[in-house]
Image (cartoon, rainbow, N blue to C red; front, side, top):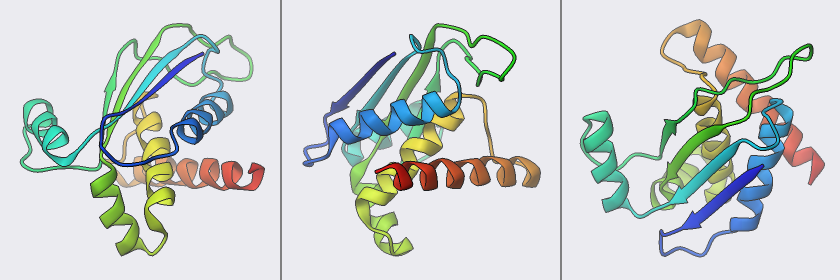
Length: 150
């Protein structure tokens, strides 16, 4: 599996840890071991520009997901597909504010946003109440398993 983490945010971050978290989530979701993922950490002006260009929204956001080959989680009885999972763009400055508000800090918020973004790349969404419950339940489960393994 090719997981690339690019820190262009100017902040000091645990790039290796984010790569390990991404691998953990993809393994748990039974994504093909050769699927490719790029996680780019950027500053607020960069994510604001991407948010306006691709989402038609103003201002910085926390995470943007850009799926490529529409890979989906593998089921127990089937082989997962190989390909490009996609790109995640995450803003540590926004994550820092959100982590403070949530009371769990920046690192935990960046981990949450990484898992959240990967789930979006895998086709999960939270627009409808049922989707929200499924996606956030899975997100919580994955984060709890990750933290228990550390």
